[in-house]
Amino acid sequence: MDGYNVTIFAYGQTGSGKTHTMFGEGYETKEQYSVDEIEDDNGCAGVIPRSIYQIFKKVKKMSNANVFCSFLQIYNEKIYDLLQ
Image (cartoon, rainbow, N blue to C red; front, side):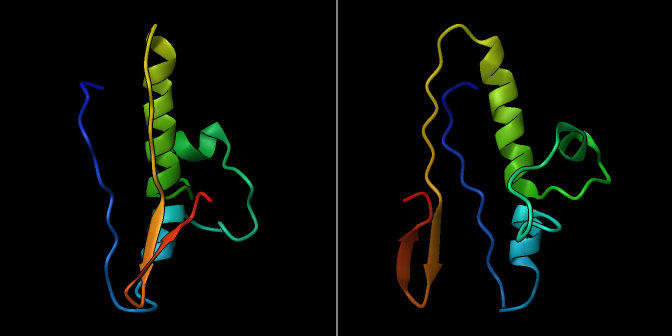
């Protein structure tokens, strides 16, 4: 929360588990994870839901904060903005 830029990057062969690691178990059918699933070390939430939860948990305690994020996919040498 000290003004650092951070990148979470998943790289690997097709079918190696990148999406599962980043989003978590059952991401195709879930609209959101519960707080218990995110806070539980054995929960099914992936890196992205856990990271976003921690960021906004800290931002909530701050009086003045700005958060900017982008969510990109690079596939076949093309960049896709997944938040559009």
